[in-house]
Length: 116
Ligand SMILES: [Cu+2]
Image (cartoon, rainbow, N blue to C red; front, side, top):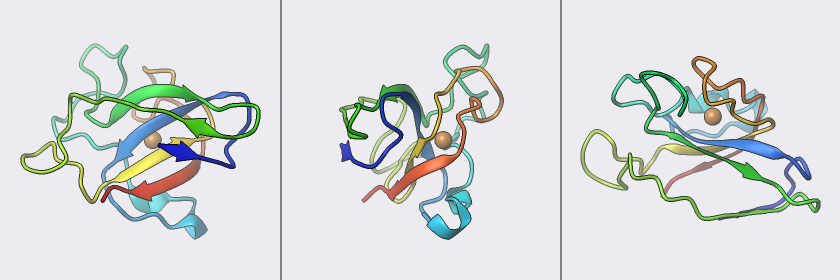
């Protein structure tokens, strides 16, 4: 994945959100909450977490560019309750603290894309 124009030089949260609708005019609220087919708590540090859509924070370069590969074993592309095709990938303006419910206190929604 390669994304440009992000908040430069900082950690940002990265999640799968449950609805594959990215509406920049409403700050991507259209994408709903985190993808969470097992009704878990949010975060790697939560006793009953994480959400299937939780993924590690990512670091954006000083040029505002993020290039990364993330392997999430809690989801599949197609088939089953944990399939994410048609859901949304979201990058936030702040980092995920891996424990605050239900969002990790990750800040606003900077970038959104539908998984095809
Ligand atoms: Cu998110």
